[in-house]
Length: 460
Image (cartoon, rainbow, N blue to C red; front, top):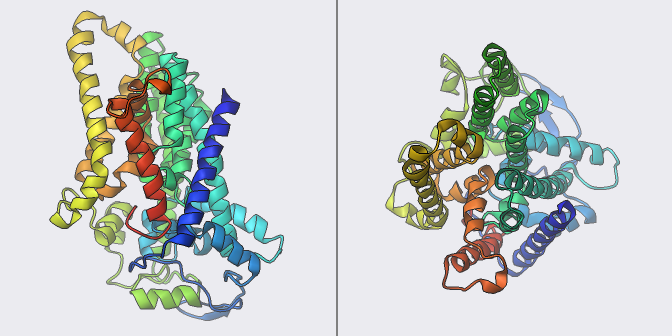
């Protein structure tokens, strides 16, 4: 089944790549006033610090036929947040607003791009970053599809449901974000792998490392800590596990998982909060900062970066609030109605099915079955709780239009609930049915989202 799912996942990515190429060439690009990675005008770039001038060479320009070919084929995959991730991969965290994007994905991209750039075959670092970002995401997407199948089979022991869940995942409504230069595919694979590890063998080292990587992949990765907590407690109760040893093991797991995030916050503090700390920037980065009035890393000014003075100087919440106006009900404005309509299908779908699950659990299962039996047999409970919390968070706190990609990459429940509505064979699907509605929703977002995103139209 692994080979079959891998082929399906690859086929869905090839379709996405072809669609974005066609749409990018046939439709004119929208040009919104949003962040764009600065491009050096010449191969020899002037690199400056705030206290002294230095000179360095950095071939980040697209100046060969290979660069133009890569841009022609994959240029539609670097828009919106992809620009931030690729900027971090190319220039590191040079602007304060880039701290909203967690480091694992751009670090992986940077490592791969540097390795290929060292071959000196006439491709710029900028182009290699885009190529590696797409390749990493295709690889992670295939791994995530297989992990979803294995997780579903492990919990429900239903090959038909497992296959349908993987099939729906491969053509999910946020598909373009799993191929573009976003961290969704990497985060999804790490999250599903963590879930699978928790419901199966719960190996300490693998659980800790996977949780740590998911946490530094996306901010909502912190919620993944609930899985080792729940399943360790479950294992302790069911197996009469030594409680003291279990508590120590769980504590070490969580502390180890938080270590990389702590290092990232220390790095951010050093770059933006330490007085007289200087950072070298290329001329292109400096000029773009002056043009956009961005705060640059290095040599903090008194009026800049107030988060540095907090008791716990964590930048994420400040950056989201200050630069993107993220906060409780802040997005509830009449002008955002179209974005609410885009997010409505995934929010309504998950709310409805989570409430249905909880109602069945509370009214039917809890009164009639012993708690120990429910704890043993209903492994799906923490997944539904996680999905419900994420859906609530999306509804009230985030930019509502990101709900689709956030939920599609963070919870398997979306695919489980959808798979429950599909018949055993697709021949039995009727358009005017729940299964038909799900397929229309998934397919339309798959196609329309790809066309809009790759032309810089509002699909974020």
